[in-house]
Length: 80
Image (tube, rainbow, N blue to C red; front, side, top):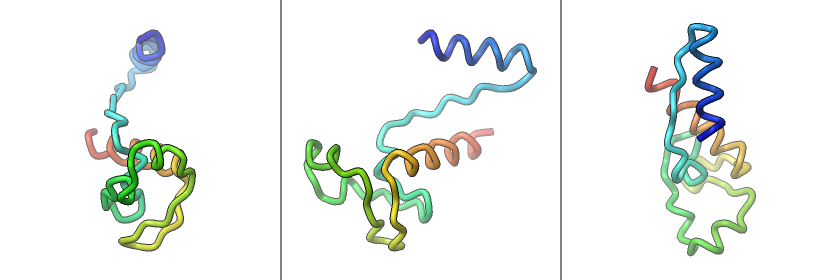
């Protein structure tokens, strides 16, 4: 994609490594404890309507988008 091309160019320019992470299912994984909560048993359309949730494993209250971003960061840091 164009965005990835731009990011790769900038990383090359500054001598950095671009680490790409598959974002699939990252909103379902708790960034606090790492448990995959499989949409909390909801169907896909119900899950997409959920903006905040509590992890049944550790009890952490999570914002869906912020949590997904944190999980992506954790995955990227684990790769490097």
